[in-house]
Image (cartoon, rainbow, N blue to C red; front, top):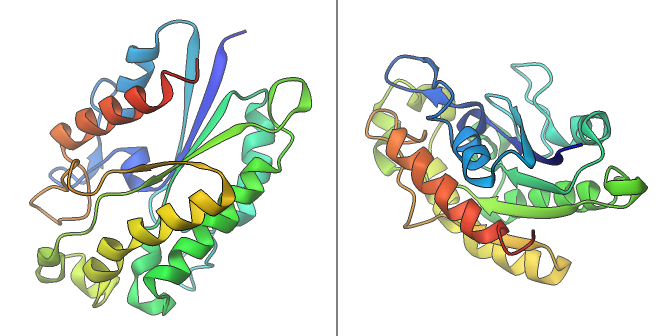
Length: 212
């Protein structure tokens, strides 16, 4: 059996292409590039859902709360070697009224749930890596996503990584910060482009290769 890694995220894990409003193909998405880097011994499971939050129920759309879904998700893909969580971008939406620290708290709660799910090898708990997503560019508000996202999303997403790093250190969970390394696109300023997907795949691979 291949060694399995679940990538649990939002549209940037699903592979949303803001230029075409469709999905990037295999070979472009960071998850599929990561699978190439890891080789035939591994299976990378893409659990990306556009709009997904860490712990918040969205009043406008159904089924986006990651906390409600992560347990059955991980159990369905067990046994797992590693769970990679990259969320927080959608949690910045103005309608959720969360501070950047609140968002980090939600991701920490989600991470702890993943770490407590017996989806690892022989019923053990899987390893977890939390990634702080790239900050939303301030220009997002002047694009088509601005009305839906609301104000202040760029500020909250910029502040998120520092809070996440602190909480993951307390929780003793592996952490990776992409701020300043992986850029968002220049269309809606909140999704990865082709270059961003490749850079993220390289970062994640270099982070996790020492595990295996």
